[in-house]
Image 1: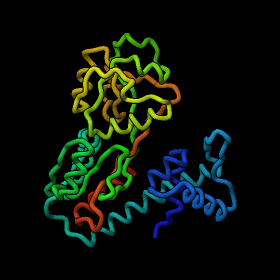
Image 2: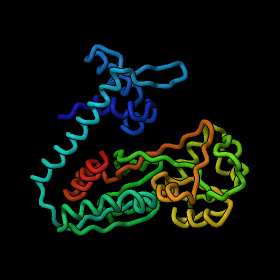
Image 3: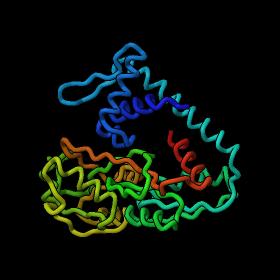
Image 4: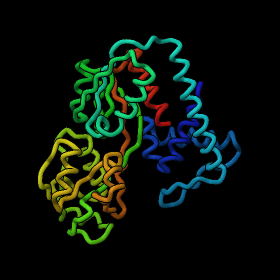
Length: 297
């Protein structure tokens, strides 16, 4: 019913990157290009300008289409969700799992809204790292997971949910770096706090470093900690640095206790994914997925 070409355009227009769009949509880059060209043929205009250095910019027509695409996708999500409510009775227990960042900073506000609307549903939330959440899905201990990271288990199905960014953070009083931006090679000299093995955050960082010829073994980790909150607390009492989700430090940025150090020519974007077994999801899990997408659209 929904024109997938519009979803492809929307994703490319938001990311301004064909590689990221293809990864998020789970289709090849040639397929992304094909869908965009079909839209340009349909509207008889150019939607994207592509420069020699692979940068993408929206044309005026592309900006207009993006505006309408946002409205159409939001309306469709509402329609899809509301029609689904007519087919399902919302009672029972919903078992979900979230990787640490998701479970601490993304899911709680959505769960509060979900409970307000479906207060007959009992919800249990498992908080663990990405690897552990995926294992819980495979063992059928939970119905649905929401995780971060780049590794994919072929026994599971992944669906993009929300985009996030990892940033280099330190205490506002940290004196080891006197500027708000550093070169990538300076990362090798900084005392760092890292997440534990199996963490999706650690996977994403390692993957982002590879094009810069930087590896985790090149870094100077002070220690590995198993939660974002423990890392934030440690940062406030030390001259260490850490890569954290923007979602996790919004309050600290507002109060000025933590600050972001930009890294030249490096942006670490990562999506959060719904992760589920192949096949039909339980009705409650399907409804919760729809509710999440609607709340973030």
